[in-house]
Length: 379
Image (cartoon, rainbow, N blue to C red):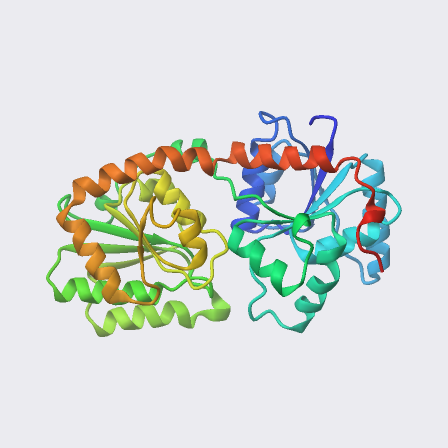
């Protein structure tokens, strides 16, 4: 694989699920013999981390004349002897499509999200670019089926590669007591959820759970680790206001963005999660991997990654009453749930490791190195 050089195209290097995944890929590239180059359009808070990964990083920002940018991108591919281009956003795949015309360089595109509520421009972009790549990669079977059907894509060109988690990085976090930080007794049931308050997640259902637990005099504390997102701040504000209205703020903690999520996960008695339309659910996988009992709604992707509830407890989406009943069963059988979670953790660490993720990418690149771009759909 060292002979195949892959150019990874990114937008900004700010903190997000895609950027975290790629940073983990880059940090493990040397051990996994992945020959990579990173090309990005904008700086961000993770820029220093990417540079320190050891993978060559090249910043190339678009010009007012986009044709000049595409010409520079093409020149960059040639000067760096790029064998395969792997875009992480549809717009970068579009630029790379035109930059590689006539070069026979295969083009990959990973879709990290859905196109829900994204407007006509993205729909037109996806309709154009998806049939013109050599392979489109998806992070779950459910996501793959969605795009294949909506855009009438050739099924043999659509590949599922699950996200990978760097479990070694998770295990290396310095431990400190979250209970001590919050002033909590060791006997208190500590539950938590991870994720920014964005359109993907449904923390409001978990606030309903907190109310039901409080009404039943259950000694618990609920942690939300995730930031308030400015352009949809009402999702955070509604949760805080609900907790104020029902006198829950002494039991519900809004911690904001945290850099020590693995440390928090390892100290929870249970992890709870509610999704509106996740494509994968990295936080859920991380929680399962530390051996914590996990409760997650039965959104199709969550059913998939938990293997129909074998690896976690599924509850009916948007149904806090179903969630509280299943949570009460856990409270009655905590040791049984803990042993089941520990058993699932070993399996999860094999299935969703960053090493397995990179191996799948390498295998795909080996197959594509000598693909003729003329076989892809053209203008």
